[in-house]
Amino acid sequence: MKLLTRSTLYFLVIMLPIFAIGAGYLFKKFDKEIRHETDEELVNDKIQWMRYLDTAKVDNAVLLLKTPEFSLTPTTAPVQKKPKLKGVRIFQEPENSYAPFRELSQVISFHGQNYLLVMRKSQIEKDDLLKNIIHVMLIAFAGLLFFAILFNFIISRNVWKPFHISLEKIRHLQLSKLDMPQFEQTNVHEFNQLNDALNNMSTRIAQDYTTMKELTEDAAHEMQTPLAIVQGKLELLLQDDTLSEEQLKAITQSSDELQRLSRLNHNLLLLAKIENQQFHFTERTDMAAVTEKYLQLFDELMAEKQLAVEQTIQPASWQLHPALADILVSNLLGNAIKYNTHGGSIRVSLTATTLMITNTSDHPEIPPAGRFQRFKKQEVSHGGASNGLGLAICKKITDSSSLNISYHYQSPFHTFTVTTNS
Image (cartoon, rainbow, N blue to C red; front, side, top):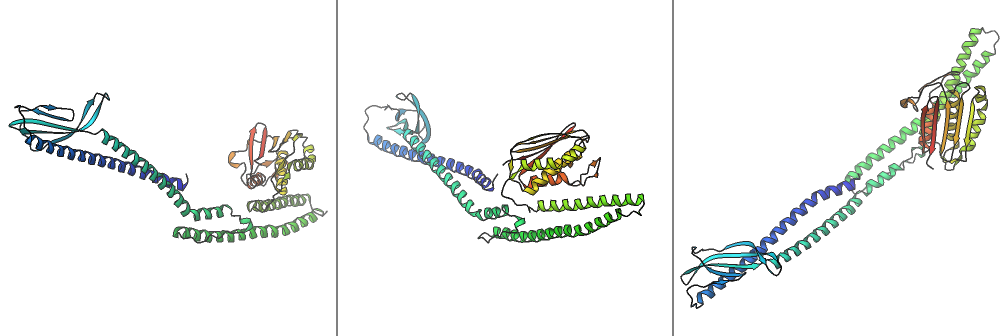
């Protein structure tokens, strides 16, 4: 969940109860004020009636008046000093329903006789007025809430704008180009602290990257020369007829290990270049041509192991550097030959979006934890131990080129599949 969305939700959680409490308080306040005004009207009407009755001439000894809004009935109850006020509901015949009234009742004395004076005022219009007021209040509260959320969103968006600018610069950071972004100062103290930390961090990262890149390239370059010299010396020794059979065997083993060391040095340098994103290519590579090329190059090796080859190659153009395409196909196809059984089979299938290479093998399934890790060695029946970098290089190529590589095993078939989204 985005920070702005979370802060808006927190705002709603806090403001909705406050608005609800405020609306309830105002409703009760309005209702109390309306009842108070009605009670004052009833008391005033009672005073007017009292004055009228005091001055009226009545022939009968007992007076009886009774209507829904006013009644004066004889009673034996004692005289009350103060009137009683309460809300009642009275049945209305025209509407066939009960309507709210405000009622005043008091026992008074008139011409020596006690009477119960009851006066009522209808609350229907005032209830309608109160409902209208509540509707207006709810609409006003809803409008206030909407504009409060809108303004909060706009203000928060503007306040967090420097953060999103810095985030975009980090997302587009490319170490290989050594184009380190500069994070400008803002008018927010916390963002200034963040940008200062990012500036310091990007500077240190650029320095460390440059140092590591130079060290890797220099080490790989400097190692090639002595390795080539030693390899040349060993080849000269192999041509010496005075050496015994055991000496020749030792020199041959040393030469093989030296060649393996040279390949290891080359592969480690290649891995470093891939990880450092030193292969930039904007055009597309013809994967069909690359696949057919390596099938022809490995034709003698496959014939030597008497491998049956089944190939289905369709036109395919991938967004992949040509050098990386060569390495990817040669490593996967080379592994399919190297770990295959004598007289086994290889199936190569290429479509517009998928490269699938399947080979038979006596080796068990590659464990998930070690399929694409470095230096996970497997013994090779005809050529000693591998350096364990082939699949790791393939994984780095696919990761850096927006490709996906997967492995499937169904005895005795091992299948590697590379897919592209473009």
